[in-house]
Length: 462
Image (cartoon, rainbow, N blue to C red; front, side, top):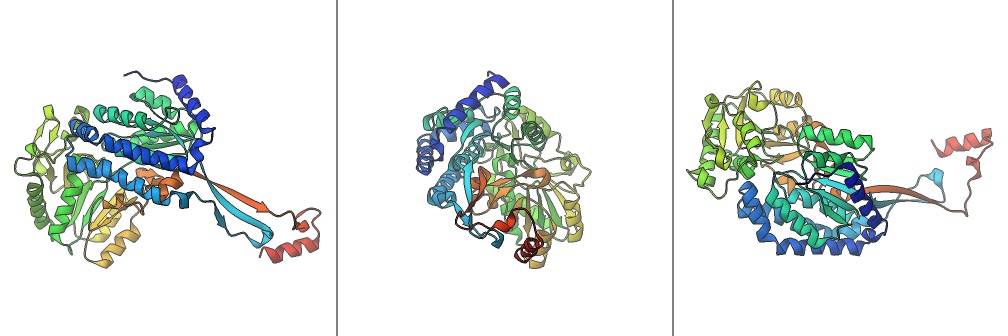
């Protein structure tokens, strides 16, 4: 795989900027036509996409379609219905001091944006931000993950069949290419990935004063109160944690379970694992694989056999790690140091909710938080006293799959958000324009400033 240098990236950017300056991408009909073309080409390549996801991550057809393809169809449908309304010039109020004026907000594209995708949802997490860039009127350069080569080939195929090369292009490569890209003068950078790499992206972007959206991760807690439907909680926790073999940025990273119901919840979790994946999980078509040996080795190091109450078996040749439940975990354990990003679920117990809130707040702000409870006071207390990107009450992960909720992190888990209207806003600069009448001329604002003018000013601006 050929790596790109800074000079080659600058040539790509200039080609895109030249196309952007033609003004074609600003046309609403053009944007909508490209959305429809993208949907058509994705439909034509569905079998190839699902096959590539199976090869790279062992994703089942259901998971592949739901989380990578169907999700995009819903997003395109939303913007097909709402883009014209979103893109309208918005008239806003004007203060009395500007009598005779009108105020407007124009949404304009940034220009040429860079989108860097991760390996865990390698198709959807390229095209969902790309949809945002398109509907806002931008050109885009795409950098898919080098760790999912089969999906990356299909991403490139879909983009080449849908877009002119100077409008949307794909760049492949590893660390050197990524470095050249993030150190180049794009008009916007949208990055999805790990916290350490996110810091590198932001530092590089700052040198060129390029605005960024960082969709990162962190240790997302799942709190299980004593007043809870144990069956529902176990079902939804197992689903959210072990989808894509735990390689989901908003998967429940660890459980904080009330001491009174912990033993019963563990029993229910083990029941659900067997119901979902069978006794021989290794042979299940619905359980994924770790993306590569580096991630596999990292995850194996996190498993403390003395604390494993279920699972723990691994097979390096097939990159298989069994769903693993660890009990009696403490904050000092290695598994609690960083985001797990794999099929290992540590369980910590608690007695007092205040302790839980203090513990979560003492750590970097998580991308997601989940709470299972039937107690409204507990619900309010957690929502009002803990800062996190987003989350669910009595569910996991599903806050992502609605265009009416923004998705993004806070603090260490990222900055900026997208999905639905937020995608349009993220990739649009809000340009303020005040239009003043020439028929009304408020001369008192011009020097010399007499006492009478000062008095009038105080009356107007009080």
